Length: 230
Image 1 (tube, helix red, strand yellow):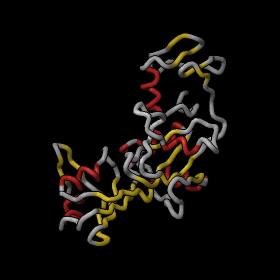
Image 2: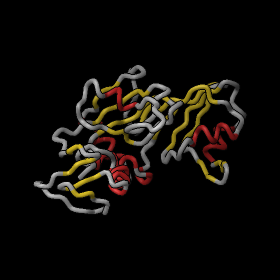
Image 3: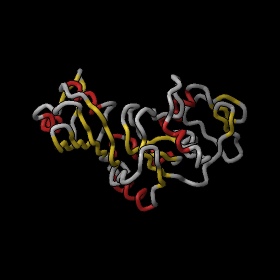
Image 4: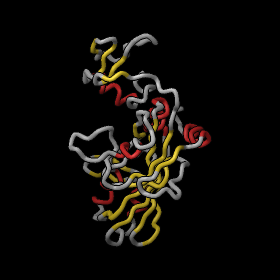
């Protein structure tokens, strides 16, 4: 229910419930799977929530320096705030880009859409352009595709292609936390910029940093069609 209301993704909503932030008819509820009906009054942090009538799917070119979360305990600027000038709906990011990365990230108030796309089993491709401050180590692209173990964690790109001495295209399907940065740092390659240029078959295109647009219904359907776990 919280995901369909646009509060957060299902996984994030579970934490909100367990943290005691949800009340149903004035009573705090912390048990996952509690059922609610049309006449129940559900509040999060004391504010009533209701089902979103309009489902939104938005592509943003996230600037560097913004974090991908609903709010940040350290007071850092969050990417979703860029959408508040146009949308009153509660939107949340699908997946993440770290603070120092930029590029394509999706926002929605559709919990099912977020759940399907975010799950590793969806195997949605995410393409990145990585630029380094110094020439790339020889053979890094082949090693990344074959698989690299860094501090006990195994990382492997679906595709890695050298563009020039300082630039590489990397395609991931799972995308573990800070995967590209960890592999490049382990190889002694200092990243100058890291940009995601597409999730699935949705291209960043000519969107400038900080700009966003709504996905067409065709783009939404094609993204879902690419998911292995749909």
